[in-house]
Structure formats: structure tokens, C-alpha cells
Length: 349
View (cartoon, rainbow, N blue to C red):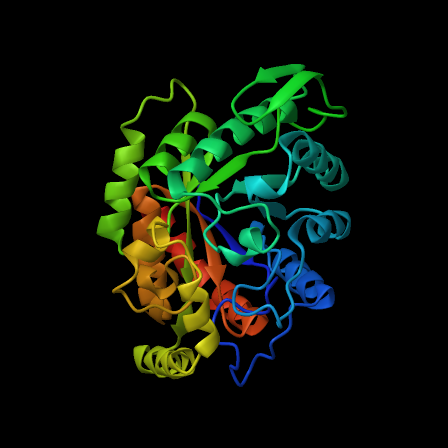
């Protein structure tokens, strides 16, 4: 298997953990996101995830960076790092989104990827009048949407007459200058999500969780027919790595206290889709961070965190999308202390 790849979440909503951590001001500005991604590239990280929301899920009084315009700017400023930009199909017509993605592919010279997420936060779709829709209906819409987008990204001439979209004799250029098309990451663990990534995705992003649970998820999707198209796997996780286990536990305790005091997080959870697998799976599992966060168990001394990452990699997880707080100093710590240990463990088999 290919070596593990590591990336960060761009702080598009300021933070993915405590809103009032003493060492990290809440800041979702373009300048902060730009600087964080440039640091990630300087550190040699492989990728960055730019999450998409129109309003901040922790409160509409908080800033929220727009994902696609920000990614276009990041594409022009970076040279090597992959830019995974999330998209909720309901927000963009597939032809418009495909054209935007191909333009960023040109700007970045072949470094953009799509992360298709079929939405979980009700207000950003309901307040606009777009409408949220029932869980499986969102996936039906997303499947047809992605079918059109995927074809347009290849530069093919597309005719499509479906339930949600009609596209006539449409071909987008330029396309295919750097590779066949940008890769497609798919999030979600429900049955419709598994079916979607099996049929149309390139990378499945499972939520951070214990290795046995990850092994079961990957085994299920691996058992589904895909022909000769290999499916890759990725996972988010929140990292607290310290020289000693005691120091890591002390930071985790601080995070628990700050999170327990967060009225904003409780309000966000009240506005989520109760059928979203991510929230159903973790309803009774306390965690810091999003999409599983600390449930993946990347909390401890440097050797413990490295060993857990190597364990996930042996199961088949190639891409690790990591959250840290404070973001830059903890990413620097990870690269200096944990990453060399991971590489040594992987090399040793």
C-alpha cells in the first residue's frame, strides 16, 4: 500500500474544537486560512481539507470562510499541496460546479479534489429556501448530481435526462490537461453513502473511530463490486500528542472543560439531521473535534499516537485529515515528533 498521507483542516470556521481555547483566538479570516495552508505546505504535508458551509454551524454571528472562492485563491498561492474542497450538491448546479472545479484544476495545475458531502446542518439550506430534504432523498439528489459532475470533469460531451437535472450536449473546456479528472472524495457512512462512493467515488472518508470499527466499515465497502477501479480510504481525527501520556491527558481535560461550557456546540447539535450517520454513531461517544475527532484515539504520547496511526494505515487508511488546537503549533509538533515515528513504523511493517 502507498505510504500514509497527512493533511489539515483549513480553519474556515475559526476552529473545529473549543471556541475559547486560551492559546488560539477564534479567527476564520482569509488571512489566517491562507497562512495556515502555506505553513502546511512548508511542513511537507500532503493535503488540506476546505470544508463548506454558508453559515457557521456554531452560530451565524460567527465568521465563516466561503470554500470555493477561498480554494481558488489558495490554488494560486500554493505549489504542491492537494486542495480538497467540500461541496454540498444542493448549493450548486452540477454544470456550474464542474466548471468551477475545472478552473481551479487549471489554476493549481492538477491539485484540486472534490469532497462530496450531502449535508447535515439544516439551517444553511432551510433559511435560503433551497430546502433540506430527507436523508435518503438528499443522497438520491447527490448521486444524480455527482453522475453529471463526474462526466463533465473528464471533458466528455454530456447528455443527461434525469429526475433532477437535464443537460444537453454540454462539454466543458479546458479539461484533462494535467490528469483525467480531479479525484472525488465522498463522506458519510450510511448505506446510501457507501453505495455512492462504491459507484462514483475515488476515496471514502470514514469518521474517526476505533480501529475495529474502521476495519468493519472498510471491509464492507471493499466487498462491493467496483471492477478494476481501486478505492482508497481516508479518515479525519483530532490529535493531542505530547511527550508524555500525562501531558496529553492534561490537554484533553482542558478541552473537555471548554467543550462542556460551549452553548454554541449544543445549539449546533440541535440543528443537525438526526438521521445523519455521523451524529447517530457518536451520540453516546464523547469526543473533541468533528467527524469523530478524538474518538480515533490519537491522544497520548508521541509513540502511542504514531502506533495508532500505523495501525489505521495497516487497515487501509491512506489519508489522514488532522485537526489540531492550536492549529499551527500543534501541526508543527506533529510533523517534528509524530510523523518520523509513523514513517519508521510503516517502513518496519
